[in-house]
Length: 109
Image 1 (cartoon, rainbow, N blue to C red):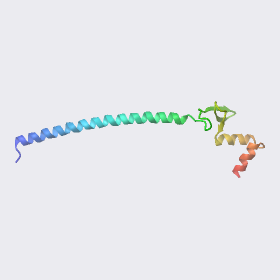
Image 2: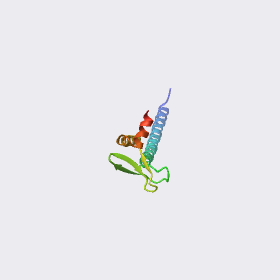
Image 3: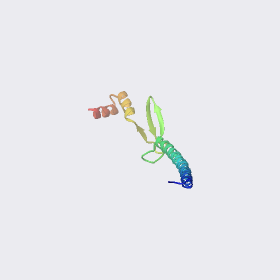
């Protein structure tokens, strides 16, 4: 039969264990929040870097240029010009008899 002293010791041990659990829970919560914040900052940086296209020839950042509904990426350094498939289709429709139209129709066949 446990004595009063034994039960008091068990209660003190339980309280000590609960305080220790609370300490580690709070510490883990802070560490997780720091990691989450770091990950969000890295993601924002990666997203921003992915949004800027780089010239495959010289490595400069490409600028966007629009003319007559066609959007192209243009390199300010080497003068390269890059088009998306949709932009090429728009140009090919306008140039039915030109070389671009013939080239594009040849690829569809």
